[in-house]
Amino acid sequence: MAALKPSKRIRYLFTVNPTAILQLGFWVALSIATMTVDHRYRYLSGLRDVLATTVYPLHYLVRLPTDTKNWFTENLAGRGALLEENARLREKQLFLNVQLQKLTTLEAENRRLRSLLESAVNTPERVLIAEMLAVDFDPYRHHILLNRGRQHGVYVGQPVLDQHGIVGQIIRADPFTSTAILVTDVNHALPIQIDRTGVRTLALGTGNFQELKLPHIPNNEDVKIGDLLVTSGLGGRFPRGYPVGTVTKVEFDPGSPFASIVAKPIAQLDRIREVMLLENESADEKSVSTVAPEAAHPP
Image (cartoon, rainbow, N blue to C red; front, side, top):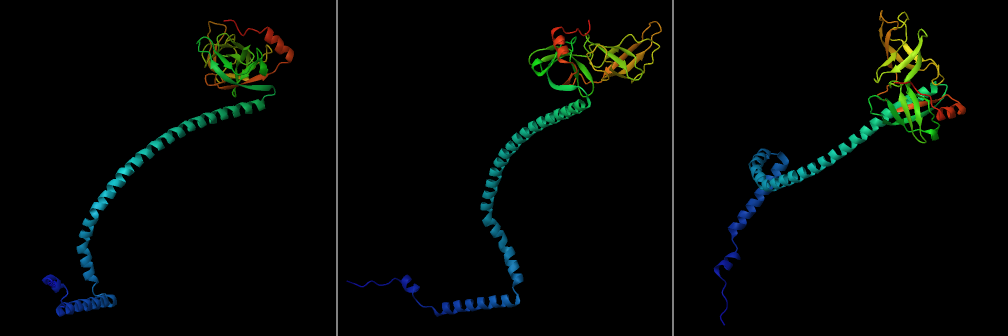
């Protein structure tokens, strides 16, 4: 059997070439010398900058596909996350706005209750605070429904006030609710007097929340715009000295024995939410008022 002869290519791979060894040694020595000189004397820093500048576009081109992929991934995913976060923030903002409105309402209610409590401290009579439940929308009747009734001590004829002055009086007392007539109702009349002069008259409702009529005051009486009207205490229903309104219009008619005088209620009748009920009668008087209520004023 004939022996296998190695091919020319195999023989070339294992052939020792002295010239190649010398070239390898030269380049290795040159590299070592170059690194030593550069390390000690920094002579090749300029060349390094030139090479780095030349190679930079290649690095940029190599990184471009990866950077492009990352950019698209971050922007598309980031946009979705931003949209989702924006929706959550809008929902949270809506919730906080609703809470803020509720807190604003509670703050306003707190201020009103504080005013009522401060007014209650200044009144010698016992008071009961009630909240308004409903308003009669009949333009000819100014009635309000309160959340206090006979079970809470409310009785017919009981005076009703807010933090500013007289509001009206109770005309119906049910077990758990009551109805009050306002001083501006056309069927209501309130005995008052001018605080500055002591002149007594009635304050009649006109059906307008901003007006009260003062009849039967002679033309020669001393009445001025801005005069304070207070309860006179006559009739035994309203205690004396509570503010009712201020004079806003005075007209003297020579052809009539009485002046035309208009006043504005001090109580904010079209904005009230809570009121005070004065307890200024004895138990016997309450029972009498409940059985046989006194009419306010004929229309």
